[in-house]
Image (cartoon, rainbow, N blue to C red; front, side, top):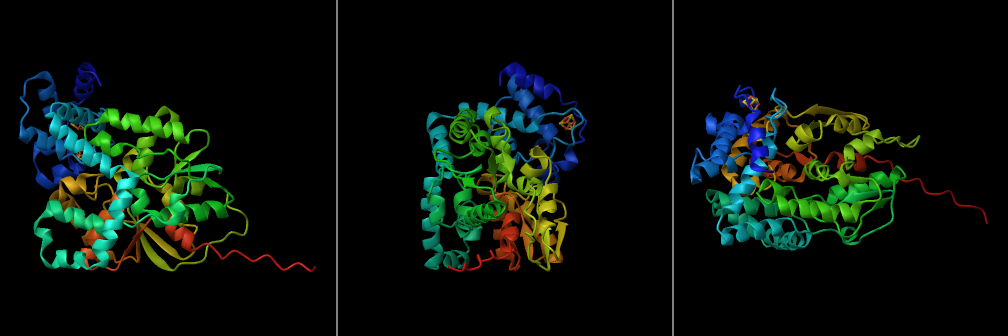
Length: 404
Ligand code: SF4
Ligand code: SF4
């Protein structure tokens, strides 16, 4: 984005303040600089040279969750997410080369299916040897930036054998992502089972990469664009479906991937074969709506529509879904205290309502919510909505033997 375009985008803000009550960081801190309006003013000052860069100013830009809850509330349609992305890109360019390299390498590791696979194997050892229990007993929680990785390790699982095989044949291509492969293995298997029962073959094309959202939100738009281009080359030619709402939102920003479908929407819109009735599940489920689903994909009505296919399931929204849970991509690793503070009210609602299941369509939110529930000792299972659907599929009828 050119400087003129950035200033034009920030000038759209009329400083009305209607966005303030919708911003989770402003609600938490009651500090103008932690609000959308305040951040826009800081970016205007920085871009025009009225304000000098400072660690304090950088901290206010870094503490934005990029949840975009401010955008639907804004009468002037200010693109706060894109403005913050651009400001972060400019601040990242101003970093010394070695700091840029360290940040880029860290993001490359998080966005690589291979390194996340290795991390998942190490995480399995960490759990199996009891190191995770020891870390909790030793009070690792007092070191939030280290504890954030320990929490992440609790939710990583090595990819299953089917995930390692690439299949070029199929009616739709499944976007596997990077983190999803080690946090959403069960979801990816469930998606394949359900689609195949609907007669839709699933391809898992080779050459696909991380969607790039982590790079874009952390000041590396060129790297994000490069990944989107590689994905467009690997995945074009048939309908594309994704299971992680944040990845779907990012993929849709590329013209060649604009038609990427979110899995619940695809399953809700597809005609189901006559006689394929799901088994009943008499249980309460609360639906968590990730910010990417709410503010970038237009809402998760299709999640409710899909779950309504399960007889007996009592479905309700997790209260205060409009407020970010604090996961926000890499935010839970970079700002663990704020991430936990934003999670606390969600845990209070879950403690009061005690559903059997909590469903969410984004893997980062699922990890963060599951970690909080585990620490609070609440026996609530966190899963993707499609996992519940897959579990309730009726058994496949065996072909009657033929007389020979
Ligand atoms: S994107 Fe979220 S955290 Fe950032 S200013 Fe908007 S509402 Fe606040
Ligand atoms: S609602 Fe929009 S115009 Fe009003 S202060 Fe917030 S960003 Fe600016």
